[in-house]
Length: 373
Image 1 (cartoon, rainbow, N blue to C red):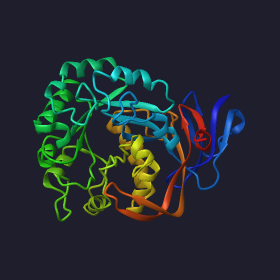
Image 2: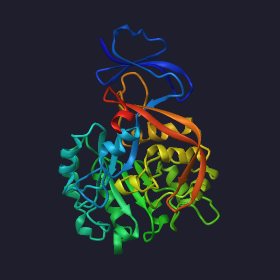
Image 3: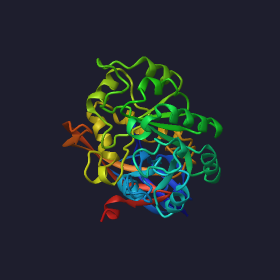
Image 4: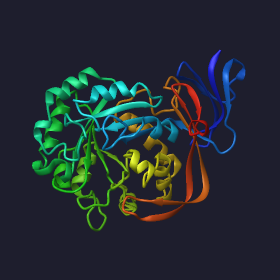
């Protein structure tokens, strides 16, 4: 007997098929798979889409620190997200605690290690260069190679203080010393100048908060992409949304779409305050915002599946294919008016709403109505 069969699954392409799952892997995707040999069968008739499990590439999901934190299952499986990646909440001094905590959740949890050994104990973790210990970074990655999938450097004035670009140069040194592990770079207010940051980034680098509405952004006053951005993209830079409380502007996202500077991944930068009070709330709300911006479903789903998985080298996730991990998101899109707000307080009225209905996580079918009770 096999474990689970999803009948009449509607793919983003519109194709209807069955998905067989066994031992936490996708066994087969085909039309009219015989239902006789399965322990559990889920009928998915109607307007229910199925995709590879959503991956949120930018979250704060380490509950050991109070400034930015949230429960991985609250921002993960209960929101239709099967994999959350914490972006630098923990550093080398507390990554062991985070690793130990992560095993108690159903949602898959991974971490970008903050280049500051303290993690985000306070806002200015990179204002003291003594917090950047390259040997501690290396030993942490060696100890948790399947948990730490990258490094994180927050390169804005409130974080680096008077150190300017120096923390990023040290982060790039740490990246080079650790087999060019992916590096996520947060951008915001200056200094350092965005042009200086971009000049150093390229392959295996992820720039998050790409559509923030502050000065020191990726576009000039006329909405054209800065030349340093175009050069960095040519070198392989990955653009991530990282919505957050202060880092997503409808106006800037519209500039990006008009200039064909589209994100490679959509992420939330979610933690308990912007989940409960907004403007983030969850991944589905963030996806609804991009539907409002004119992106098609076929454009959006790779930005929360294939692309983030590729960016952090999760070879068995992000694709709905045979032999991949059986992490799946089941969702619908309703035609209804929905109020959406960006990080600057701009409110718009959308006409489509993304609603997650269920997930398959490590091969287990989980109805989200039941887990939200």
